[in-house]
Amino acid sequence: SNYLWDFRYFPLSALFFIPFSILNFEAAFVVFTIFNLLLNILISIILYKIIMIIKSKNNGDDDKRVVKYICIYLMGLPHVLNYIYGQINLYITLFLLTSLYIFLKFKELKWQFVGSLILGISIIIKPTTFFLIPFLILFSFNWEKRKFTFDFPGSSVRLLGVLLPVSLNFILFFIYPSLWAGFLETNFTGNNPVALNFSFSITKLITNFCYFFNIPFNQVSILIGIIIIVGGICFIVFIIRRFDNNSIIYGYSFGIIVMLLVYYDSWDHHLLNLTPILIIIIFNQPKNSDITKSIKPSLFFFSFFDLAFVGIWYLIYPLFPFNFESTVFLLIPLYSLIKFCIRKRDVRSYGQDVET
Image 1 (cartoon, helix red, strand yellow):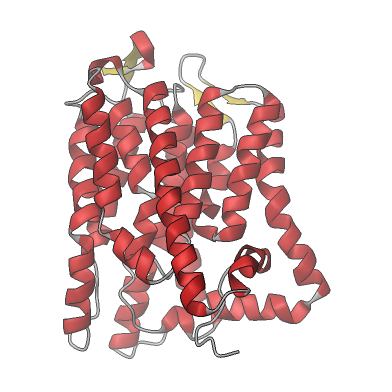
Image 2: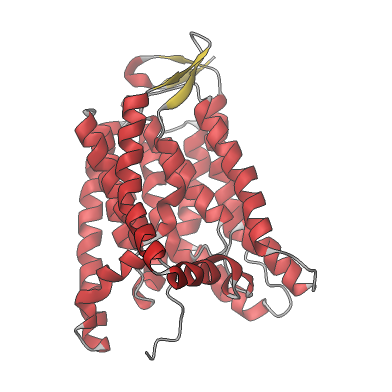
């Protein structure tokens, strides 16, 4: 009853916090922080296993390099706010990487269902991974045969798995209509989405601009417009991509980047869901590939410099309320991913793509 902030997640995510509610605040915070530390150990193990599955033959066999990049993730400054705020982003990262590992390791339909089910649970906890759903669909353009291909059984199983946990929330919304109204107001139509803050999403930069200069605007219309433009481009590019090997990795990266660019509130600690995926892409590509060269600066910026610009925003926001630096460093890997997907290539050994 003394909580000052709106609860912005799906209703069923509240179940996750029940064990902590039986403790006083101080004890719950300590226990929660310890859990986060343990989660980072599990995340590191799964990240290592994924890299071992997808690592390019042109990326070398030096395990020390893998450990170095895992340490970069663990040392990332977004962990600071994640711990201080008591955020649950590491739980999302754990479920995200677990589902990705299952998709890469097991091709049977039952495992595809399990992987998507785990991803659906991550959406219940926090909808950061919501825009990954379209990229689970096994629909693409076959450039060799010049026709679209659609794996109906695989796509159906994946969509069923991811939507099943999410749909349970809508049962509660149906039973309690006021819960649905509150969810919409808190996340889309109320004061939260329009208030000035240091979010680096394109949508927030636009609403901050309109708010700062007293320009009338409708935040939902801006959100939908940005989703159509950014999400539409990424989904179309993913469909017409010129490769299939390990494509789920790039679908995950598109989905997370789209969410960070389009939703109102994209914070520093949300980057903990993206940086492991960027690391995976770095090891899936040759060391000196163009996409690797483009991703590395963004990875280092997100890990070590983004938090500083949050502090700068607080110092200057009465005069300049735009935290756009992370937006730029999100657009750089996005552009590289788009370029990589549509580039003509000749598929060689290990499924690595050579420019033609």
